[in-house]
Image (cartoon, helix red, strand yellow):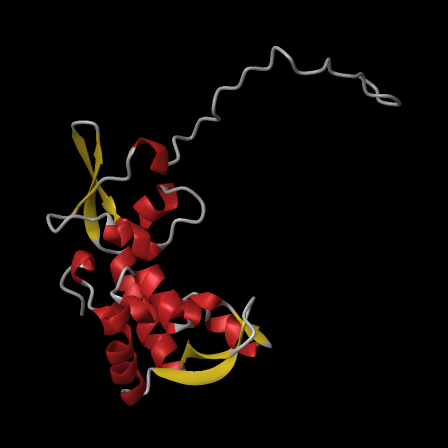
Length: 172
């Protein structure tokens, strides 16, 4: 059980990260995000800490190591994938984190919600680890003005847009 999403261990972060690459194990070329450097970049861990955490996870039977070609690289690298046990562990951990109670700061207001709701409000492409990284130890999340969906389309200047052409062969 996780005490707080903001207190994830290096191993927890790696499991959550590798969960997103479950299907990559069947490819001929692997994405760079599952190498030691890619894992360090994606999780915010120091590169020298990653091998130790990976060794512990491998010894626990939660990940497996594969040597293969990485997209855009000529030489082979070690890539890391979750085992079935690792996938179960990471999925359980993710569910627990998404169900965590947090408060979202909007201006001066604090809005209570589940972390999963806040993740749904974030911009496309923002992942769970990025949201958890913005979560303070007090359980307050600050997405920032540009980092959340407002439910409104952005205003656009359409003064130079072309005239709308009529539809042909359509009834009104």
